[in-house]
Amino acid sequence: METGLILVIISITVAAMAVVALFWIVRAKGADSDAVTMGEIMGLIKAMGEANTTGHEQLRRTLEERLEAASKRLGDGLNVHTEKTGEAMKQVHERLAVIDSAQQNMKDLSNQVVGLQDILSNKQARGAFGEVQLENLVTDALPKDVYDFQETLSNGKRPDCILKLPNPPGSIVIDSKFPLESYRALQSATDDDGRKIAGRSFTADVKKHIVAIAEKYIIPGETAESALMFLPSEAVYAEIHANFQNVIEESQRRRVYIVSPSTMMAMLNTVRAVLKDVNMREQADVIQAEVGKLLKDVRLLDERAEKLERNFGTIGKT
Image 1: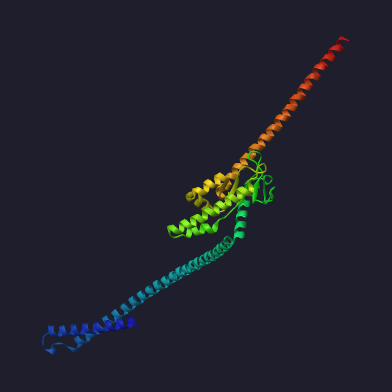
Image 2: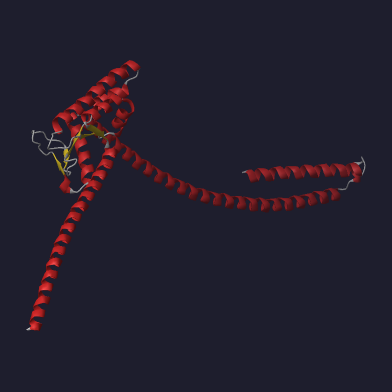
């Protein structure tokens, strides 16, 4: 449609140019119209027609070439665009798959967090959580023959764990405690008065656990003179040591030392080093005893060799 319109415009332009040219020829030859012959006019019109036809043909070929080139460029561009669009859609699908996987992981994590909250909201389940964490730490750090779980003491009490160490210090009792309610109340307090009230409640809860461990699990002649209170939360442990010095002083006075998972692991590594040193001393004693026996045998051998030498001398004289 655009090509036909261009051709029409060009034809009209050429015709107008022919009319203008004819006008100027007539004017050049004078105002007398008879001076212009019909042959000249027909020749001029014929020349104009041929020129117009030649221009039309050239214009048509030019337009066809340009349209073909434009069509080719458009087709190539559409192909490239289609390929890029396909690649982009593929990447979009891959990203969507990654997003779906991340959403599923977030959903699973949310369910796990909800499950952990349900566990920690129940006192018995929370106690079991602390005991399991303590058991994992102990079993990972120490050999099986130096600890026991839920062993009954002479007073009928059953601590979460007892480390059977040589004297001194003797068997060390470890009991897990988790004062979570009072700690949450302390963290959720919004003003100074509320924090003071929650702090007093938190202090009372922790001190109650310290006193209970000291009375139940420190038995003269059976256990060590001190015991350990295991807090399965680093945050609670840090809060006590940062803001409740009176609780720390009470634990030291009662010889009930508070440990967290990280400090518990350090303590267990120290215990392992102590046990290794004890074993080395025991082996050294065994080696010393065997060396003493060997020296005794060497002396006996020396005495028998002297007797044998005397006997050989007597036989030689005889």
